[in-house]
Length: 314
Image (cartoon, rainbow, N blue to C red; front, side):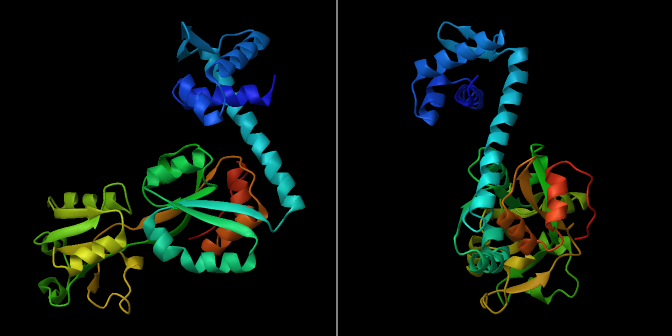
């Protein structure tokens, strides 16, 4: 049994049993993959795949178990490499963070500045996407950790560590009548065209739920994945905006005004997602603690490795 055979096996499964795509991903030939998987089946004495001619059509019941074990073996192989690097090059390496625009633009800059100052020889990369996309980036190995709010809690393969809670504000041009409201209500907000986040982003479900509970239908005329885009179109007069509080800066956003709306919507929680049983370099633990001081190494390690949870408060 060879690690290469396990990689071929997992890649075929990950690519929906498409041998051609798997071969492209692995930079090898389709016949070569087929031959190695056949050899593995012969060695194990069971069929992993059901075939129709040269096509793989289905995974057998024992094949599902074998593929799951193969994934774990390959993950532990990566952990071995990470452990060796951590002891031989403690302050060198790479860290790829998958996150949303709002986190990258407003929550992470100060942390990234601190991190790069402390670890100048660590190559730091940011990948942006929707919450679902960034979780997939981590599971596929394209990123080490992910940071987001919505959807991230639905991926069982990832450990989710709460970092902080946040809420929303309503933004409008300086002379907009909604700014004269002494007590902002959902009924008042629903009178105007609304510009806010796309359905997959930044607590949109809390916004929808709040209106639904009051039997109101908000007039959402434009959605975006980018807080700065929302602010741009609100400033143009297309509507009022519902925005993450962290994305509004009175000193910078001089063409807009904001009203706190935290009393109207449930708070959202931003989390860090980490693969279960992953080996993390020492500087990754440091980055996480810089971002969320309550998440020290003891807390993160215990959670990722499935040990007795260590309690902490947001």
